[in-house]
Image 1 (cartoon, rainbow, N blue to C red):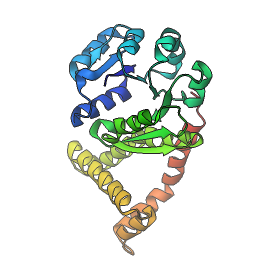
Image 2 (spheres, rainbow, N blue to C red; image 1 turned 180 degrees about the vertical axis):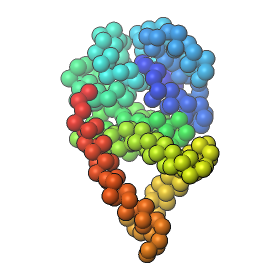
Image 3 (tube, rainbow, N blue to C red; image 1 turned 45 degrees about the vertical axis):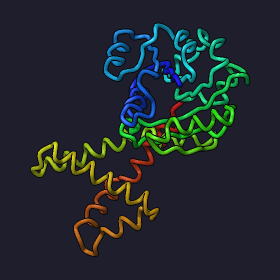
Image 4 (cartoon, rainbow, N blue to C red; image 1 turned 180 degrees about the horizontal axis):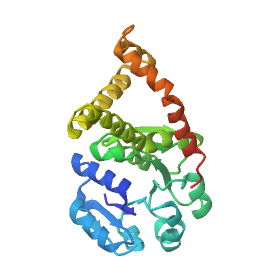
Length: 261
């Protein structure tokens, strides 16, 4: 099955890297088009996919098409490929281009599904939010899940929750990276080599996240288990509260939710 990416930015590359690592999709069955030909060919040599000369050529050659370009580019791309796209199942990972928007633009004949991915797919730990509204066939719907199940967690959400879900899973890695950097800086301040500081913090976050995910315990319960009365951890927790950790996290989500693509 040939899968074609229109756009080969960071998110598309993360998906391809994840597929390469798991051998879920053979590199020679992945096609891609992007207007920057030089960069596209460099990425093709590095990741093994086949570069195409135009978005129309890509759509004609692919069995499935993934719309992975910038949201503002989608309309111009559709002007070129809409007719050829009619017979192909389409996945959109372009922010804001959900089922309703494609339906309005291309009409009900286009089979498609909106999916919000995340960059940790590169290491098999992505989150893929699948919009519950779609018009794929039953077989295609199953394929839309299986394509990403090997490189992350797949979760189906109603359309009205895709925004907040994507904010947490899609924007969240950037927020987590800031936390890694901040605690890493603190480690360096007290003498740790930077590489060691980042390794410690990253593994700590990975372990804490896996413990919560696998046990299902409330994060507050897990936090309390580390905080001995009068001990060191509760002092750090108190300092984080005093400096507005919770408010800062919620403000970040509010800022994203107020943004209109």
